Length: 370
Ligand code: MRU
Image (tube, rainbow, N blue to C red; front, side, top):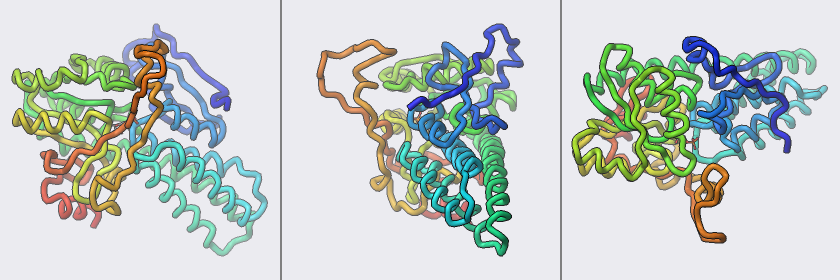
């Protein structure tokens, strides 16, 4: 499938302040525009998806990734699909909505934000269709309402990250070094970031924070994206390989770990990028706090525990190949679970836009939804 019909290369000569205004995703009259995260840090290329199938393909290929950003992309994909639908009747439009929702829902299984976004769009759509109006009026209204809702979700996500930052910054001491894994920054969200949003807020408050970024094999979100994003903002960052984390904890260099999440079960178990569980166990061994920052859209109260979270298994080729070069023997068996689940007993606190949850998470998380 030819996914993209337009791309804009950002000039490398742009000033620093211009560059720091990168947008992870935005709605434009031409379609859904996003920075191509598969090409960072080498190239800042923006792609415009002109139909919902292109948006779905962008999510699947990880052109856009990170749970909250996937949620926003899903909503914009649905809005785009419905807006361009040739349906003449409400029944036709409903059928089209279901097709679009299904295509979008089949892209990536772990980040619950995707399904949360589809359901939120469905509620708006159903409400429009329940109104007593002609088919023509209903279709026009449903199209514009879905576009507005998707844009609202982007704005709300940024606001949630900023609120998370305000709550979480107090947990980070001044003159400290923290470890993060994968990319839970502006690139993984509508903007500002969850884990990196907390770090950004602490830095904005005047705290001196150095971030150690795990490279995050095999997709290298830490090396390619977190290191790029933090350097972009002038936040001191040191890149390490995943296997170095324990060493730096034991040496006393790292004072805390802060990560994002793809799905948090009702009991506080956290699905996040593969390798997170290892870090949480290491943090406990070394008596270092292990924080998770995530919006309420990442919390799945319908799942009692993390054992029920579906874990995406990606192509083993992402393990046996690096930047297009084969690094393992031909035909060797390899596995690539993209996420793991950290049991809640290793999680010191969960930072959300409503405040900070601690054990027992079954009560503290649920309270945020009341
Ligand atoms: O496979 P990815 O890159 O989509 O995985 C992303 C993560 O695991 C992030 O840590 C998580 O989505 C939180 S992003 C704020």
